[in-house]
Image 1 (cartoon, helix red, strand yellow):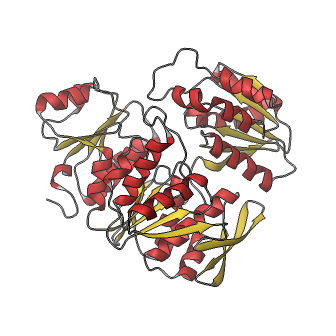
Image 2 (cartoon, rainbow, N blue to C red):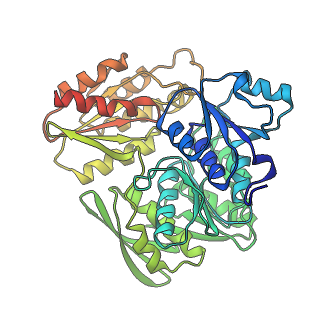
Image 3 (cartoon, one colour):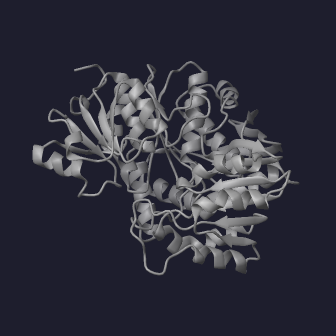
Amino acid sequence: MAPGIPAAMERPHFIGIGGAGMSGIAKILTQRGAKVAGSDAKESGTAQALRALGATVHIGHAAAHLADDASCVVVSSAIRPDNPELVRAAELSVPVVHRSDALASLMDGLRAIAVAGTHGKTTTTSMLAVALSELNLDPSYAIGGDLAGPGTNATHGEGRIFVAEADESDRSFQKYDPEVAIVLNVELDHHANYASMDEIYESFETFAGKIVPDGTLVISADQSGAVELTKRVRARSSVNVVTYGESETADVRVHKITPRGLTSEVTVILNGKYLTFTVSVPGRHYALNAVAALAAGVALGIPAHNLASALGKYTGVKRRLQLKGEAAGVQVIDSYAHHPTEMTADLEAMRGAASDARILVVFQPHLFSRTQELGAEMGQALALADASVVLDIYPAREDPIPGITSDLIIDAARSAGADVTAVHDKAAVPEAVAGMAKPGDLVLTMGAGDVTDLGPQILDHLSS
C-alpha cells in the first residue's frame, strides 16, 4: 500500500468525478499514488486535468465503467440510487464511501483546518491555501473552486497542514476532526435538508464539537447566526473560541477596511497591536474572509505578520468575481453567488470597486427549493443592479416543484423597482445582453449553474 493512502482508497471509483468536491479528492489520491478511476456526465477541463495526473475518466454513466477490482465507490449526496455504476457496486459488493468520509480519511494524522459557513467557504479556504503555500509550508488542500493562480482546486502537499472546505449542505462537515474550524456565518439554506434554523444550529454545533482537544473555533463576531452559535458552543463546550470581525467584542478586531479599487487595505487589532495588510480582491466580505484566515493561521502558531503579508498574494478563485474579459469597453465578470446574501455582497462589492459603472446582471436561479424559500430575497438583491436578465431555474439535483419558477424572483425584483427581463432561452442571452451593454458597463453572470458558460459568449457578441 502506498504511503498516505487508506487501504479502501487504493483503487477508488468516483461517480461524478468532475464535480468540484469529488475531483479534489480524486486529484489528491492520484498524487499520493492511488489508482483512481471514475465517470462524469460530460467532458470537461477537470476530466482532462485528472487524466493528465494519471486517473481514468469515463464520460457518461454505465455499469461497465466500474472495474471489478475497485476497492470502493465514492459518491456525493447528489448521486441517485439508480445510477448504473452504484447498482453495479452493490452487485459486486464493492463498499460505497461518501465523499466526506473519503476526505476525512485524507486529513487523518494531519493538522486540519476546516472552513465552514453558509457563504465564503471557497474564498477563505483558498486564501489559506495560497498564504500557507507562499510561506513554504506546502499544505494539502481541497477547495470547491479552482484557484486563479495554481488553477486547481486541490493538491497533495508534503507539509503537515491540510486545509479543507467543509460542506454543511448535507451535514457532511460533521465527519471531520479539525484542529482549527472556521465558521464564517450561519444562515438558513439547503432547504431540502434543513427545515429550520434550529436544525442548522444543531448541525453547526455538532461540527464544532468535532474539533480536537485544545483545538480552536474561529468564528464571526458580526453575523447574527454566528453570534448565536458562539453562545451555544461556549455554553456546552470547552473548545477555544476566537472571534473576529468589526464588533468591539471581537478577539481579532477589524479596525478599518479601506477600498482601493479592486483591492482593499485591512487593519486589524490582534493581541493589542495594529496590523495592516492588503486583500487583492474587492469587497468588504472578502476582506472579512481574509481576517478569518489570518485568525485561523495564528491559531496554528503561524506568526501573524508573516501570514498577513502572504494573504496579499491571493488573487482570487474562478467564479468568485472573476474577470472573464473585456470587449467594446464592457467588462464581463463571473459570480458564483446564488444565495441572496452572496448576491447582495457581490453587487455591493462591484458598486464599491466601480462606482461610476452601470451594472448589468445575468442571473440564473439555482435549485427549486432555494427559489421557493428565498426567491423574494433574490429579487430584492437584483434591485441593486441597474438592469437584470433572469433565466429559468437551474435544477441541479432537484426535480421541479409545481408553481415554482423564476417568476417569483422577477415579480419581487420589479416590486422593488428593478429593471428585470425574463429570458427563457439561454441561447438568446448573449445577443440580448450585448445589445443592452454600453461602453463602461459591467456585466455579471451570476449563479451556481451553467450561467458561467455565457460570459465568453457575451464577449464574442460584444466583439462582433
